[in-house]
Image 1 (cartoon, rainbow, N blue to C red):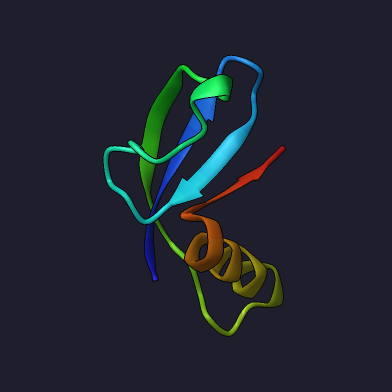
Image 2 (image 1 turned 120 degrees about the vertical axis):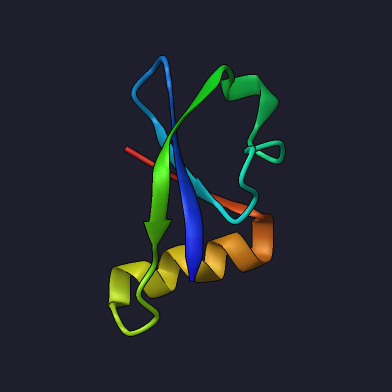
Length: 62
């Protein structure tokens, strides 16, 4: 799954399927784009990220 990786000033990271990150939490902004990221559907940690993106639109992590 193609995703985009973002970071905020608190060093929180977020993955989203929305290239511009328009759906990331406003209360945690500003978000800076870092790079495109491929999530492997076979990797357990990445499966969890994919599930969160499908459910909420994004996945935040430290």
